[in-house]
Length: 300
Image (cartoon, rainbow, N blue to C red):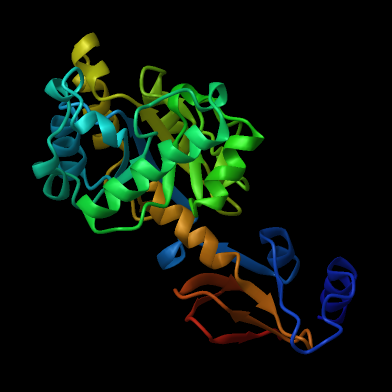
């Protein structure tokens, strides 16, 4: 225990000199305290889906997700709801709250413009359009985004931060099942037209040592275009009802990771306190612990 505390003291570089100082611990630093951070109910695996554009084919996709207990995030350009050229093939405003119940509506740029090609004021306008519209329709604060055409840069990312968004998906595939450390440049694992059955079987066999994730993305209309609805239905059937998997939206995962990022070492270095507003699930020396908001775990 003394060795662990000494290591942490070096890592924190004097940030605990005053009792009022708060130093939140990274996942790596938690591991150095012999603490494994898990998802709710002490799971280390998660599965999520990320679908763009709000096409009417979302209706069938959501029926499949609901049947197998999956949870998806749907990134929809809010201005397309009333655009005569777009609205014919899009879900209707009146059905959104019911259709996406149990799932998540996320931003995709009000008019789906390439954000890297426009000025900051236009970027902000695209975000404001989604933020205002989706909060009005869903009654929920918008926290996530998918970059139109997968295009982004540091300016775009910084404006997302300023607007209070906590995650955004890109298109470049992730190289491992480890949960991302950069939620505003969040990589999926595969488009659904890749061999997702093999990927799913690989994930089922995978034995994680820390938080992991399998994230599939695409556009629901592509299943009609390629006449391959069986692809996503078979995948969901393969992955359903696994006791070690946390089935969640991207927002669920990002919010939980944000809560976990507010675990802080107390000034005396003897305890870890949950400074977030939700429970965080941990395994400490083999013991399963649900650390409630404001509660403290004493290090032995």
